[in-house]
Length: 228
Image (cartoon, rainbow, N blue to C red; front, side, top):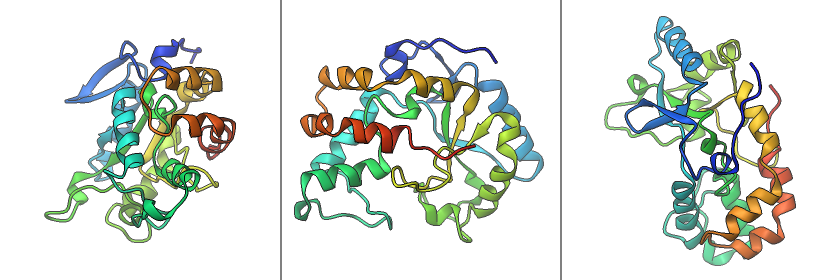
């Protein structure tokens, strides 16, 4: 596939001109639709109903998630998926614990429409809502068979897991798949200068601390992904 152009506003999730509606309230990059549909069809043949939990996420939505966690409205989780008492940790510790599970607004791969959180609603236990936690997808969790099937099959459809492993940055996310023919190029276009400029123009909590740590954040939490 030839390289696809992306504007700074598209890369940072501030516009939706690169997207189409794939399902109600679910937007994907228009170049992803065909291969994701083929992946869904292959999954169906093996007894899985592959649904989209989250696809495109706007800058504003990501900022809302970020600010709620930074301010304590929503819990920040530790590496064991347990809530952190943010009143008893330093600001810089809070920042990095937040980054372990939540992308910086302007730097989320979900801004591109290439990255999808997937699940199978038919495998959810009765009265259980989706949590997007490792306990659901690994080690005998109710999505563990889906996790194994995806690991063996997604690459032939152009997908991989950028967070296949915890590499000291973003948490392991077995539900997160990425369309590498586009996402690899988009990551190269997303530079520190663009992230910093976008943050400057918006009310992101912790902005000054983030800017002081941005080189480390960029290397450890944005570019530090699992190889495919």
